[in-house]
Length: 210
Image (cartoon, rainbow, N blue to C red; front, side, top):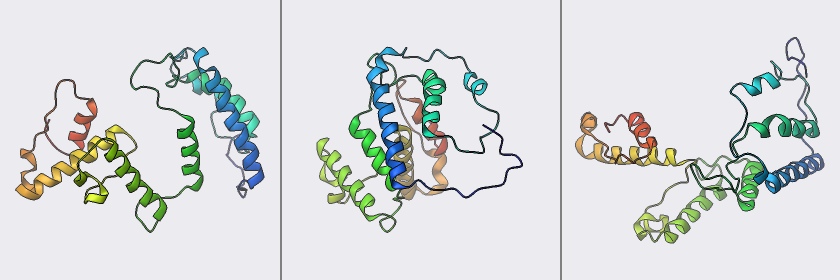
């Protein structure tokens, strides 16, 4: 692998469908083998801080490497530095959430690479999100006014921290519309001593006392 310095830029050639199919099969096989043996790895990584910088070059390679070499590097350099959240021996933080359906869904989503910030940018993504949110609301037996079909609704967030922040900002703005934005200093967020630290971060971003 060489440095990018003093190198002439070259036209990037996108993957043709057959090459994408070949490399995709290799990545799926790699992950299938990983999950077939994940219980054999120590759950907590055994590497020391800074280990990866010692293994990788100081600058990005100028020429792309074949997928075979990349997967070898992942196995040799990346897998040892993973805390294996999906291991059956993992009992910290959150429960294992990976599944075949989840992986394949992410593959489809990433493959289409749409941006769903409004209906026109991707009608299917926008409408599917609202439908799935209604499904979830019904499974949770929420009142009809919480559903899109009942005049409510919501959006999927990437993390719980994002969801807490969005909820807090919505509650803040709802109250400020009643009492005036000049009274933001009067708002206080309450939580128990068991509340996740994400609430404190959200309160700081939303400029609310906690």
